[in-house]
Image 1 (cartoon, helix red, strand yellow):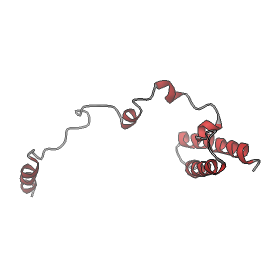
Image 2: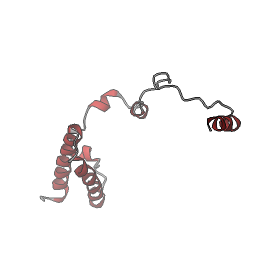
Image 3: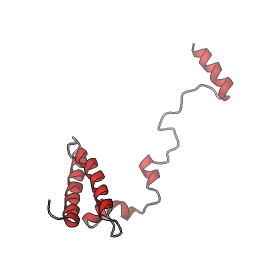
Length: 111
């Protein structure tokens, strides 16, 4: 059966059916995260946003409906993460939930 697969792969691709090289032998271009963030400066990755509006992505140009929709999406995302077993994810979710509450109180009054 292996001979059949090998001959099919040669006829279709022109290459031999050898196994790919191990990860250590591959040309390393960094992780996927490095490739995505390669254009961003290092200081921007380390420095967190200064206030709750920036953390939630709220701008001065947004209307009440847009703010409410953004907060709704963020709450759904981070409320799920708040029960994670990973402590780092859980702490990030707690910070974001606090920011969501403060933005909601700022724009829509006390809860």
